[in-house]
Length: 439
Ligand code: ADP
Image (cartoon, rainbow, N blue to C red):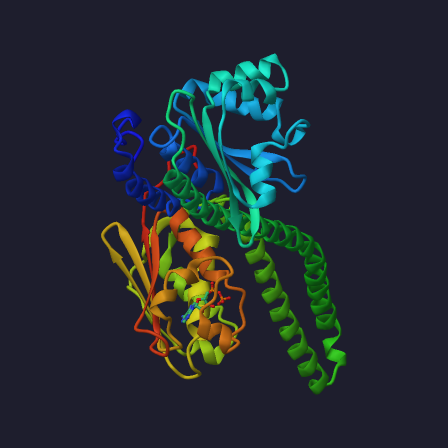
């Protein structure tokens, strides 16, 4: 039930409306993981069906309150609630402990009928009193919000003087609503904390990978220099020494390439997170890119397992060459990595009207149905890949999908299940030459 179709309170058959209110609260709570949104929608449900105004406050580490939601029957008065909290914070009350803190500290519910002279006694000054009168307080229920064993805030539900005070069964209803709200809010807060630590991780990765780039550049530079120097003195070496040095240089080069790819992938995480992958489109031949990726597989025996089924004519499209090469290399490397030693990996490419469709199928470890989507999330790996210690960070597919969607295409995985192979399909619009002012 939304506020719009809630019957006005005068006509409400209270007993009938209560289960409906509880159902509506339940439905609302499931909808958002944003703590502020969650509690605001509860506040909106309670006003005016159940009360004239209400406020949800979360307890801060310094015992102050953060008002995360408020609603008033007269929408124009909502800013006045904020002013009340700001100018007359409940924590500062000297004379009498504010109902919110009585509820929070006692972990209980405070129910009070409040007459105008009570307001006069409680008000700090004339303006405070005028503000309280304007908002309208005749009775209120203040319930502590408890999440995972500790109080996280309070829900204050207030009725104007002209409305009947809360009945005991309405207090019970308010407590039930508060209980549900607290659980949902606590979950949402946990989610927010998790998001913040993810952001921290991403920032750290971006920073670390950036810092790694320079020393890696130095290592590559000296590796190339060393190669040239060895070339100049190679006549003076024995065949055996020359072969050993060549083997070491090749291995070193592969290691540097691997490190560089990793660092670039980590840097790309940042781009995925900020959706700022930039494309430099030009006309390229996807069939040639697939052939090249196959040629560049460092391990010759792995490369020999690839079965390429490519059209004889070029499959042209307007794509970012570097990113497309990265995408194809990722798909081929995964299919080889996640399938046993001698099983073939089928790579098919077809032009289908305005689309180019690339499919990579292996007979490897497969993917559980419940993981087919999740493996495209950054740092997410399949359970078999993890438990059988296949190396990897879980970034390749996230990047690959980002590359594909930034190009306006789609990418998905299919598998009959664990141990039954996998197929990854990429569909890319071939597009047309961009307007002159585009890259
Ligand atoms: P990584 O291989 O570094 O873990 P990816 O993002 O490339 O990262 O892949 C994410 C996960 O998807 C892998 O950990 C694995 O569980 C699963 N996966 C990817 N490709 C395949 C494949 N061809 N067969 C089975 N599982 C795969």
